Image 1: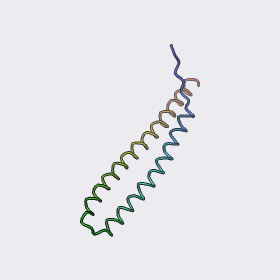
Image 2: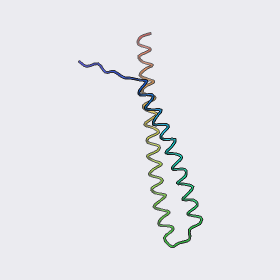
Image 3: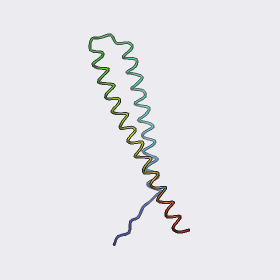
Image 4: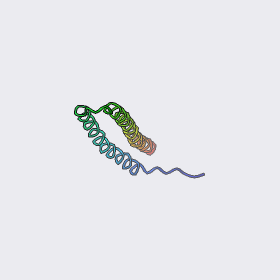
Length: 92
């Protein structure tokens, strides 16, 4: 039988790293949102609405990915912390 070894310090680092990358991702999607707003206000071409609709759909998909990554990072950290708590309870 093989023992399972969980390195909670490493898992916490990965979870925190993911959260930091999500923050960076968030700044990108926020900037894209600002650009789309500016384009929508300043562009009067006949193809404007089609472009804006496609870009908004793309941006919404990016935001869904961002939320999923954020949840993933949180789950990794939470599970690691709960695992460590159980180990501490076991040995105390």
